[in-house]
Length: 194
Image (cartoon, rainbow, N blue to C red; front, side, top):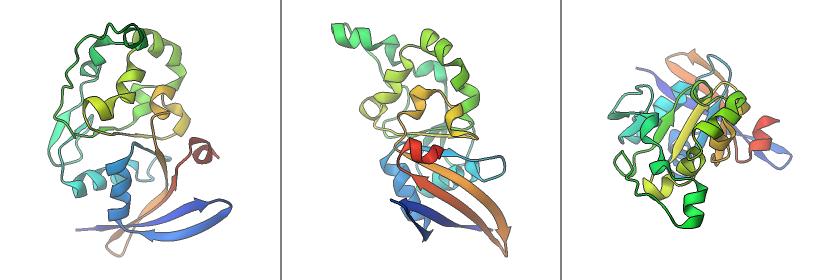
């Protein structure tokens, strides 16, 4: 059995502090906010997300199985009743029932494959309600949205803009019975890009 240890680099203005982070603190990010995890191949994006899922011991909605109680993610169910901003403005909102139990967070692995940024215009035309759906997840389902992708800006911008924290997986390796993972946490999109 391997245990996970993280070394985290947090940016505080211009200074850079190195902190050993326990998973309890990392899990708080996932419990309180929308998180986007990115990093190159083999850097432990899914390892990090599966660790969070397993340690939280709560049911979750995901497109892949991280272990524990999982609901299969069906993108067709996340349609907000086909309501767009026009229906909200005009007050002509159609009834929508969130398809999963309340408080069940959504995890989307390899989000850039399902919602690629290069097809932004097509996604806006075909799914105009998607932005409102992800914006209102906290209200309709009392849940958070967690994404991972190899490249931060490869994901559809309507999803990226709803993330509160960005985690960059730097490297991951096995050392004397431990899995060591080095990550950097950002609270601004621009900082994560730089």
